[in-house]
Length: 268
Image 1 (tube, rainbow, N blue to C red):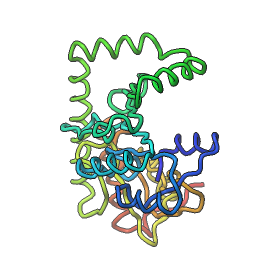
Image 2: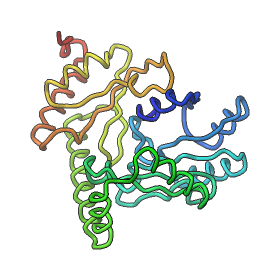
Image 3: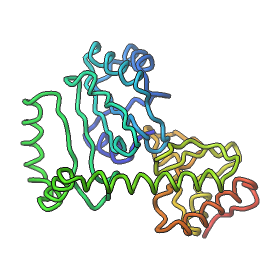
Image 4: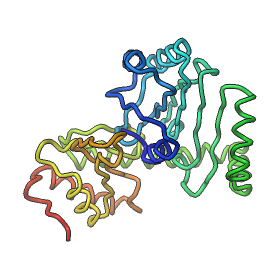
C-alpha cells in the first residue's frame, strides 16, 4: 500500500512502482535481485494505511542494504515525531544514502504548510532548492516564521504533546468500544487498519460509517498498483471533531463487526 499522493506523482513522472509484501532488508534484496530498483520510498513510522512501524534493528539493516546496493532512500517520516519515544530515521544510520522528509502537517495541523528535509549532501540540497524555487518560490513565510518560533521557545513540544495525548486517548477509546476486534494500530497513532474478511465490503462500510461521522477509506484507495483488492479499511480516529462524535462512530463500527451482513446496506 502507498500514500495516494506519492502514487499520483509516480504516475505523472512515469515511475514504475514495485510493491513489497513487507519492507525489510531481505525483501528489498530479493526484489532488487529480480529487477534492479532505482530508489526506495518508505514511511517508517505509523505507515498509512497499515500503521506498520519498522523497529530500530530493521531500520539499521535497510540503511546498510541501501548503502551497499547503491539504492537511494526517500524516507517520508510524516508521523515520526508523533510517538512519545521517536525511533531513529533510517537515513540517520547512513546519512548519505538518501532524503529524509517530514512536516508539521501530521504532527500539529494540516494548515501549517511547512516541511523540513535532509538531503544526502550539500550539492543535492542546492539542486532541490533551485527546483523548488522554480515551482513554489518559497515556503509560506508567516508559517515558516511561526514554526521556527515554536521550535525555539518550546511551544512546538507542548502542542505536539497535546496532540499525542489526544491521539492516545482516542486509541484507548477504540480498544474499549471495539472489544475483541482484530485490527492494527499504534498507541499514539491516528488510524486503525481493519481487515474485513471474505464477507466484508469496504466501499459499503465506508459509506455507511460516514453517516455516523466516522471516516473509513477502503484499502484499494491506497493500492500501489492496479488490481489490488484487499478487503480492509483505514479508520480515522482523528477526523471526529469531539470525543462524543468519535464514540458514536465507533459504536456503529462495533455493530457492523458483530453482524457484518445485517448492519450495513448501500446508501443511494
